[in-house]
Amino acid sequence: MKVADVMQKSVDFVPQSMPLLGVAKIIFGSRINGVPVCRDKEVIGFITDTDILSQFFPSTSEYMKDPLHEGDFEGMEKKLDSILSLPASKIMSRNPKTITAETPLLKAQSMMIVNKIGRLPVVDEKNKLVGILSKGDIFRSLVGEKLPLEEDEQFHDWLSRRYDLIIDQKKRVAKEIPDLVGLFKKEKVRNILDVGCGTGVHVIALAQEGFHTVGIDRSNRMIYVANEKKNALTGTVKEGVQFIHTEYKDLDRVLPEKFDAAIFMGAGLAHTTNPLQVLREVNKVLNKKAIVIYQIANFEKVIKINKGFYDFNIRKSPFPEEREQAFLRFYDAKEEGFLTQNVSVFVRGSKKWMFRGLRSMSIYPLTKEKIRSFLAKIRFSSMKYYGGDKGFYYDYLFRKPFKPTQSDVLVVVARR
Image (cartoon, rainbow, N blue to C red; front, top):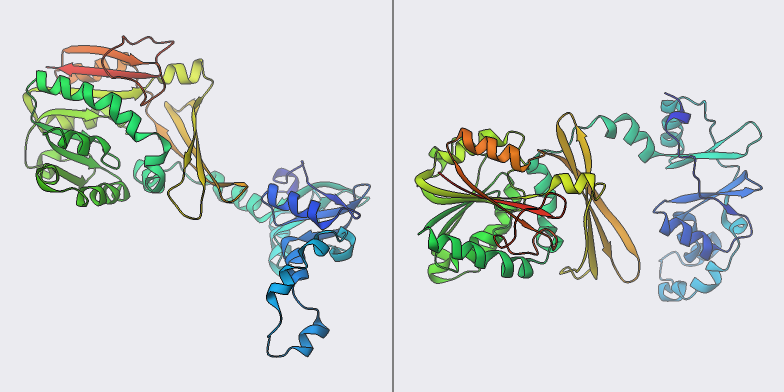
């Protein structure tokens, strides 16, 4: 594999006259550790974030006069304005290491390791800049692209720390719980199983309404967060809550009781590779007159009408080092029978937004027809379909009919 197969052709570079303030903005804004310095695209130098930061510290002669390192470090910070006004040519590394597009990829990696650098300018025969290669580019090419999509447990373990921030849980509970409570009271439900319970939002809210609730999830981290919430409860509410970390198999052995109802909220059923098998397992622990509720995204609308976009939210962060968090969720069209769900996380500190990560996992593209087919196989024959059109989690559950091209969510209520 050649450098040309992996390199980034869109390259940030700076002229030698650019003040370091401008250089710093490019390095910070692009989340890179350095940029080439060019004269008419000819590479004549390279500046890294370390080169800029090193300007704050004493010169060699100053350091020799201060062998005990008792320098005025606050005074060093005061040099900020004068340092950032320096031209790039003043501190750039001259005669930087470069490679060509035809350089073997692993040779380029060896150059990075030997010279302890993270980015290499790619030049043509006239030393003109044509691209840039980073360690990250090499890693993504050799390793990252070969990694499988994450399993449900890994995906939600990563998401658990910010799970309750992606949506406004207060608004969600205010709309969903009254509908659930009304239905369960009408059906004389007492014991409820929440499959894919996440951080326990529905389990706890239903327990507060007097129901005995058990939440199960394949993510150990999600169950940990849910149990932290449980430990903050008191009295009969706490006694009515139980969380169990388990795979969705052998549930008749894992769960020592039968349930009057099972709920799959937040697309919990779609997060499994074999929904029918999960339904069969859950069916083992349901009473004969049980009721089952499924809430899933209207994937057909997401892909065909929204072109994969699902939602974008900005929330106030509970973490002291962050002011806000932003979440972008989107889906890729079906490949090999599955959709891909992607969740990106961004955080804002004092001023700037920073990318914190992206995770992806396979999603089973459940539809109204597929759910009906699966339910029929476990002998549920009575089904009703509802929809919400104010965004996933922000509408009532059972008050509007499902509209394939308008509803953001499909809710199925099934009885035997």
